[in-house]
Amino acid sequence: MAERTVGPHEFWLQTCGLDTHRRGPNYARLDTPWNAFTADGSKLVCTLWVDLIVDVHDPKLGRMRRFVKMGGRSRRWKGVGMQHGQEARANLDKAIAERLPIFGFEAEPNVAALERGERSVKHFYLDRAHQLQGRIGLSLYELETRLHIEEAFRQRGLADQDDPNLPSSLFELVDVTAEVPGAGGLANGDTSDEHELDQPLESNLSADEYARKALPILVAHVLQQQDDVMAPITYRRLAELLGRRSKHGDPWARGLGFVLGRVTALIDGTRDRLPEAPPFLTSIVVLSSGPNVGLPDKGVSDVWPGYEAMSRDEKRAKLAAEFQRVLAYGSRWNEVLRLAGLPVIEPPVGPGGKPKSGGWGSGESEAHLALKHYVRDHPELVGARADWEANVEYALRSADELDVMFISDRTWIGVEVKSRVSEGNAADYERGIYQVVKYRAVLEAQARADSPDAQPEILVVLLLERELPAVYRALAAQLRVTVIEGIVPTNVQTERDS
Image (cartoon, rainbow, N blue to C red):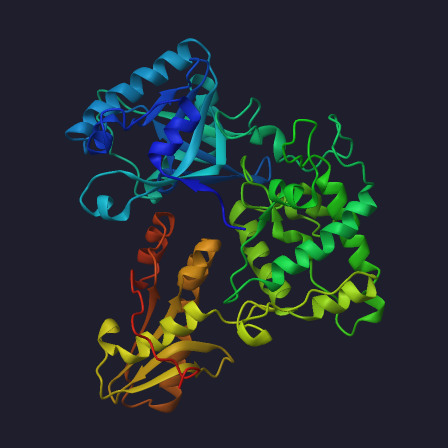
């Protein structure tokens, strides 16, 4: 399931009761703050730009810690940005002085505005809420000495933007300990590792009974995915699908870690009767808030020893690899269900009662197929020409396939495409960047082997139907990956149609 996102107007209305359209939508740019107090003045809510958050590994704790700088006066501010910056600093000072909880919600910046040298919110991630803890004095000195946080900001190109007369302050993104403003109590609703429930549920099933309900739900979710893109499911969403609710009717995720452990045990009971052991299915259930947002809870350490000692990037890579194994298991998940004595999941049916193509055991979506053929039929999009050889699903000698390949005597251009389906798991864009790096290296090796005396120029690009999330732009630039965005197929005739 995709993460919940919301526009700035709805966000500030929901969290702080602040109507940024009170003077009309045309004034939104002037009336949309960078931070604001809740309606009762008890909490401060801040915008956390995803591309300005820095991850630093703490070897002493064996985990990644996340930091952001706020409250300074940037040399880049101008116009309304100067006003918003001054207001944001005053609000921070007040919250700190009165010891009020400070919350931050991650926000995706508008790419077009960034290119103009401005910042505006594309959308907020409602499930990425954090509390912020200021780091000053001896606490800051100890952290800087041990973790070299300033160097991490410099490596990300985020240093030396402050006016030295009013520098920013360092805040750490820490575990939520109070109710999240306007987010339906996510601080209490997405905790999975408590086996005992401290609030009665509407349903009174045992953990094993919940496990037998959860396994078909998770298998159905996997079999609905497309294009090898796994959209994870949150603990809160799984609680909702299971009908696990508090006495107030809210989805209740407490104790789901124990339920998922029983799901894994249920799967393990089928292993001896299967030709290939199933992958770690319950890894697709992830946290929707806190420092480990987007990752499974700590219970996965029972299956993955050493997981807790990994950095955040190592955990993400481990999870991405397991997602691919879960997807590749495909329709064999139905055999797991059958052996566990549970109903199998029927494939989706289209017109005429025939099974739909795509979305069944990680099949290819129509969106991805259309984008590939559109690129093949429009070589000018990537700098190729109409008289070049054009191939879809071009086989490489590494046993990989390039979505589209253009070949001339002097130039080879490979294209890895990502359709709008990738919006379901933004990490697929990061995967696409590394796929380009891999395919470029393989093509260069093939060129050296085939044409040692007259090697063609090798280019591989990443082409997207939507926009590359801002958080991955620096990575693409660092790895010299050309990204072409916003290519929407029109009037496409695919081979499947002809």
